[in-house]
Image: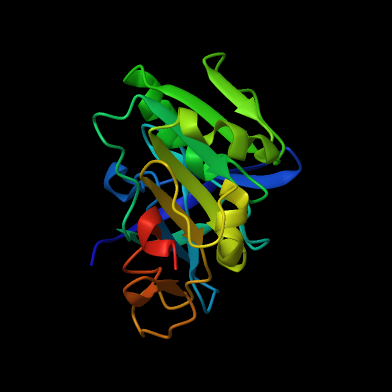
Length: 225
């Protein structure tokens, strides 16, 4: 398993949340939806970090950030790990759905899609940073009315909100979305697939899967249980 070292170079507040710049080798920067396990020397458990913005010598880590992370903190890194987003080449209308308190984990996917001239619309009730003028933004409540516009959905939500996924999408019970999509499940992953502890288990149409290894990005159709 790939390991490396990194360092916290900056902590700042963005929309009331702490974000951190992590200096690390380029090979350690997680792709959209993947995660990197980071552990200070004094920590017992590792923290999964997601990329909000890649850089030449590291990346901006999306919130939440542990309080123990301060500028200069040395980190042992493991990864990138897990299954990230895979945007279909034929996708022309991408709907980003951030159902949590941050849109940060979806921003790299938005940037990649805009470079391909894909139309991107964001649905979220989270505080918004400065966004590209080509990225439209709507409240989450607008999604059911506009979902038919999309030909692909990229969703970010917590493990706790998974049972309400159909309601977020405005779907009736036992119904399916009008287009394919993928869902990033933000779940606790204390063992990072080293112990198979099961804390991050996700119910799917094929039985329970572990977010730390089978995800954290899952096919939307597999979560329609």
